[in-house]
Image (cartoon, rainbow, N blue to C red):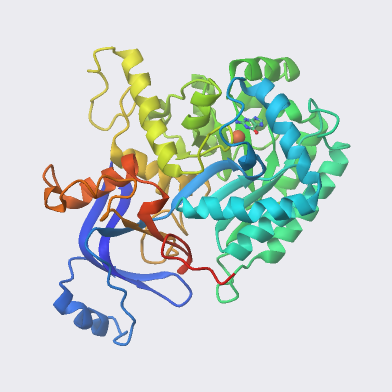
Length: 472
Ligand code: GUN
Ligand code: FE
């Protein structure tokens, strides 16, 4: 690919290059990247790198390549509920809106009818790696994994474990039954991987151990899941933590022996470097320290935290204390499958936190500090890509465009406007406030949508985008 490139580097910075040559192998991995290549020198660079016959895709001005989004937390079976139920807070919302819908996935034919459109929707949003919750059902969760696999998305997929404090029509029979189905689920997902036959060490689909949250799990169940996790250190783990004040209160009543909410998961060995903790809105200082020490990651889901009035996570503080953070759409607590929307709401949440701290908006500008400060574009971009890959413990493989990683990427197009203002803003104005690519990234993040995503690549293969025509 001969293209402009925007790539995350650190929490506070990204790199931009107007003329990069990105070499992608037939296995879909990035072999090398050379920047500042004048078009007259492309052949020379190819020759020097031993691939004179490579096919070069030359992108247009107004397009750029960036790593695909990593959605660290969302619920596939909740998609049909998008945009509804926000008159309730978490626990009532689960009971009145969410469990009744998820229960319908007992019917695997229903799941098979819904899931393809769900996965396509996330791919169209530019999400190349998606960390999904399924429902509690084994067969439907397998169908979700099959769907993501056949549509070519990189995905982490969990079958929920939940054996108490759920309605009688949507609960597992026992801890034993839950664990038995979990083993069967993990085996099935791993039989899909190694995904592409040409890429045996780089699976596209991973199973995730998914105790829904402490409230819905008995001690017996958590103990049994601890055994599963301990015997399988590479197995990902995901759960919800400290989302809503009433939820936290109830959790403390159920687990009085634990010092705090994070302590429940820690007691059962569920906090480790590949654990994804959704929400984490109200962690106290001790919990933040514990999560950082265990190298577990936080999935920040601001859209959902606003909709369900859960609160505003102090993400700047977590970052300053060394916690890994990514972003999640948390559909359908969140009303959008788009990580662009998650980024915008993360920006607003950080701004409100900063303004609460200092209504004049003057605080928190200390260099290198994120607490009580509006998260800048570079940080939002990092959280949505590289930060998400770190939270999913897949940063060796994806999250940024670097030699050795997979080509999981988007071609973004802001030429003719679509959701961005490109159509009304004369392109000659781009860059008036800095670099052209800074402006293009900002317009995409704050004003863009699916229409600006012309191609979505996972492991080098196009799986979506407006220029995509599927074989089906
Ligand atoms: N806590 C337990 N289950 C859920 C869920 O489905 N969504 C959200 N936002 N929080 C939860
Ligand atoms: Fe959630």
